[in-house]
Image 1 (cartoon, rainbow, N blue to C red):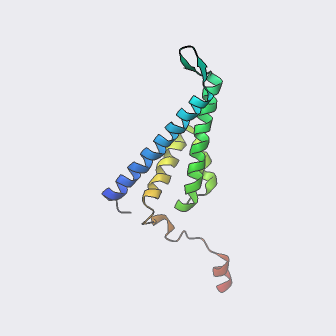
Image 2: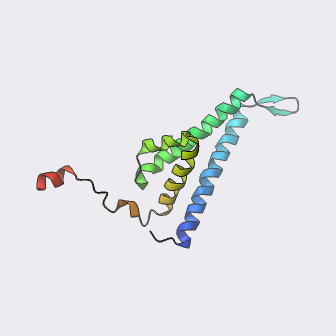
Image 3: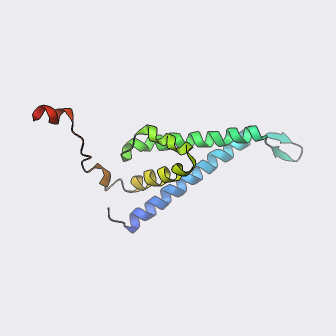
Length: 120
């Protein structure tokens, strides 16, 4: 698990892309849900919450897509809903995406498979 500058830069880039992607999705959802008024756009609190939920759903779907590739279950992306844990999950998953060439988490997880049981 050697920390290299390349891995750190990849992690930073993935974190920025993920964060900016969520901001873009939330902004687009806000614009779609906003109503035109005389001076510009206006959005009700209910529609603002709906836009935030759309952004959250986009984040969950994104993390779900990468979770199984980095040693997590796709259902673990639902942790994005829990306020403090979501930061940890985002950081761990994106760090593992940045570390994919090394894949340090796949070095034998200690589980016994059915074929190993039959062979013994």
